[in-house]
Length: 79
Image (cartoon, rainbow, N blue to C red; front, side):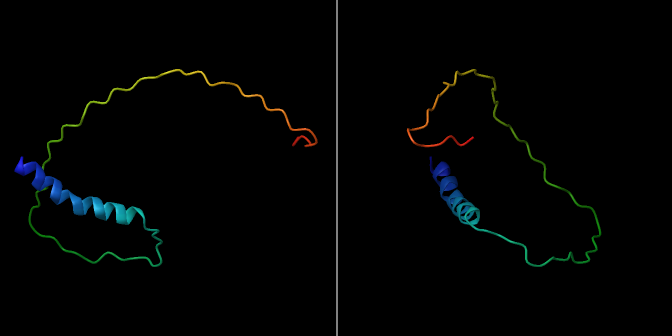
């Protein structure tokens, strides 16, 4: 139980940052440049084991009612 609370409390700043950034209007005003980097040796990327949830999809047909509108008296047609 304490582990779940710890993870929940650690994720709060992430959600706050995501909310703050999604409310921003960002415009690029200047191009950036990549620095020259020289890497020696081997790199090892981390491995992840991801178990994605199963998603069931399908189709559903619904009937949409047809609406007929008559203009009020004295109002010309838009045609």
